[in-house]
Every structure is written in C-alpha cells, then in structure tokens.
Image: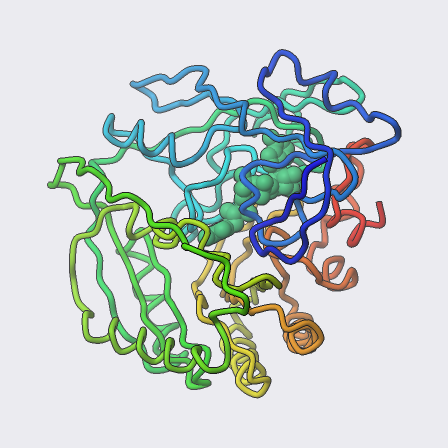
Length: 433
Ligand SMILES: Cc1cc2nc3c(=O)[nH]c(=O)nc-3n(C[C@H](O)[C@H](O)[C@H](O)COP(=O)(O)OP(=O)(O)OC[C@H]3O[C@@H](n4cnc5c(N)ncnc54)[C@H](O)[C@@H]3O)c2cc1C
C-alpha cells in the first residue's frame, strides 16, 4: 500500500500500486483481485480524482516507456502508453518532428494524454491530442484486447479518447507527428485591458498564429491580462542545452498563495509582462511549459492542497459568463494566480467525453479553504450551467453529478463501453460506480 495524491494534493490516501513494466504481461496484472477494481495512473498530473482509487488498485504505467517504432519519413510513432511527452519532444524535435498537440506540461504520459484528450495552445488549428492518434491497443480487465483507430472499431476509439481511463488499459498507441523546423518560436506578448480586447485579439490571431493563450488577472474584475501568441521560427536551428529545472524547496505550512500575496503578485506580474511586451524569440519549452521549470510547484499551496477549476463556455455567451465568473471571484475574496483564458477553435472533439468544444475556456486554481472555496466553486458552477458550458474532468475533484451529465450529452452512449473492472474516485462520484 502506498499513499498517493494527485496534482492538486487535496487527499493522500493508500492505494495498492501495481507497476506495469512489460506490455506482454499486462492482462493478468489488471484483473480484479479480491474484489478490488483498478484504474491506470500515469504521471498523476491530473489535478483532481480522475486517476485516484483509494484502497483499490492503481496500475502505474510509467514503466511502459518504450518507443516501438518510428518512421522518420512519415513521422508516425508507435509507442507504449507510459512514454512521456517530454521524451518524445526532446528526442524527435532535433530530428524534425514534433507532437502536434501538447498540454501546459510535458510531464504527462501518452496514455494520460489520450484518456483526457488533452488540448494545447493551438486548438483552433489542430484540435486536441486524440485528433492525432492513429491507433490504440486497449486491454480490458476481462482479458479481451481491442484495437481501435479513426477507421477501425471507431466507436471504441471515440469512447477511449477522452474516456478517463474507464474503457480499458491503453497499452500502445500510434501518433502522427508534425514536421517542425526546430525548437524556436517567434512570440508576441500583448497586454489587454478588458475582455472585449481579449476576444478581439483571440479572433484576429486565429488566422495567422498557431499558438495563442492568455494570463488573466482575476483579482481585477476589469478582465485585464496578457495575451501571448507564437509561430514556429523557421530559421534558428541550434538546439540549446536546457537550464536545469529548480525544485520547490519545502512544503510551506500554509499556502503561499493567500489574500496577502495574491493582489500584489497579480499586479506585479501584469506590470512586469506589460513592461516586457513586444516580440521575441522563445524556446518551445519556455513558451509551452513554463511551469515545468519549477518542479513540484504544486507544494506552494501548502498541506491542504488546491482546486483547479476549468470550464468551457459556448462562444455566444462566453464574454458575459467570463465576466460574471470574474465578479464572483472578486466578491468572494478568494483568488487565483495561475488563471488562464483562451479560446477553443470552431471544431467538435472526437471523444464522447472529450472536454474541448467551441467557446472560451477559463482555468483557475484556488487554495483549498474548505467550505469558503466550495461555496465559490458552486457559484461558478451555476454560471457554467446557465451558459450551457462544461467542466474539465481532468482538473475536477468536486463537480456535482448533474453538471457533469448536463455538460456531456454523449455520456449514455459512452457508458456502453465502460470496463466493469475499472473504477476511480471520479467515476464513483459522477457515474455511481
Ligand atoms: C502544469 C499543468 C498544466 C496542464 N495543462 C493542461 C493543458 O494545457 N491542457 C490539458 O488538456 N490538460 C492540462 N493539464 C492536465 C494534464 O495534461 C492531464 O491531466 C493529463 O491527462 C495528465 O497525464 P498523466 O500521464 O499525468 O495522467 P494521470 O493524471 O495519471 O491520469 C489521467 C487519466 O488518464 C488515465 N490513464 C493514464 N494512463 C492510462 C492508460 N495507459 N490507459 C488508460 N487510461 C490511462 C487515468 O486513469 C486518468 O483517468 C495540465 C496539468 C498540469 C499539472
């Protein structure tokens, strides 16, 4: 038994951890034992309880870390599901191939990226991770093996991409990489004073910029923030030696993100970025994964951990709903430092439970102040519900079941593909088993 938590560190509970190291020998290891069900656990970078299963089995996939085949002329990669996105990027970018979609950290596994159908800063151009997966090999707890792809067993594929690990264990996957000219990006940083300016920037950037994202100052309900956009730089080729990551040196007894620090933090960050606004050249790791530079940064929230809250709101009501959420946050006195606002492109996701849909997505994190934080999050839920939006399960530890059901209209169809021997804290909370 081992105490395991997720990235939000809201709980630390014992799990029976079963390391998976050999893809030929997974079938026996994932069968229910002594009536205990299991769930796959990759790098545990999901914030809430989607990969947790206290007192049950956790199938640790990071030992399934082999690349199986790479075709250097087509960019097609076949690998085991525990391979890290970071390793793929570092190995293949110097050879001219890049993962088409990656989230805000590269410390995640291929299996985790498929199971949450993760999105990056280029959704308007390339959709989400699952759009680039060409094949998946799934092993179920009843020992059946299912091969699925955009053309084969397509319903299994649509259930497994974004399927929260509940359709079986992904053992292998094939991904179509994208040609790249190198590791550098041409970037622009532009301050915006309010949400109207944000939406103008987001719309006007979609055509000419591959990557767009913004940081929003949610301590000022004006909606001011910093917009960042980037395109691959086609000239610079040298791959530099990366600076070593730094580590959060200790677990503070209370959250370092609190009412005394938040307002000055946010104001200082806004002014610093405003001062440095303009064009520059950035390495892809600095632009895509800035938080990876401080290992275990999640410990800065102290022993009680923190909640992430990510919603997507349909575009026609996106501005009003975002404004209403900012107002609620300001009124509550709770605040978020790592607040990200961006638009998703006008494309539907292929997974039955995939999160991205056309609209605007706001990701926030709040130190865990128990009932105070729950009250605020319930008020944000009401805004999301009214706007017919949805909450991202990869970040969630508390959304009410009715909001999940309302946000994911293909849920009933998905349930047909569930593996009866797989269960997580999230599935018990939101699906009843
Ligand atoms: C700093 C930071 C930034 C982030 N930014 C983004 C972002 O921009 N966009 C975004 O979409 N997400 C983002 N995330 C969330 C993260 O990308 C996802 O939670 C991702 O799924 C984590 O992958 P993991 O390997 O850690 O999987 P885990 O968190 O361990 O597991 C996630 C899910 O995948 C399932 N799973 C894992 N492996 C397998 C397998 N082999 N077979 C079947 N199921 C499996 C698990 O059961 C669970 O349901 C961010 C997280 C952090 C910490």
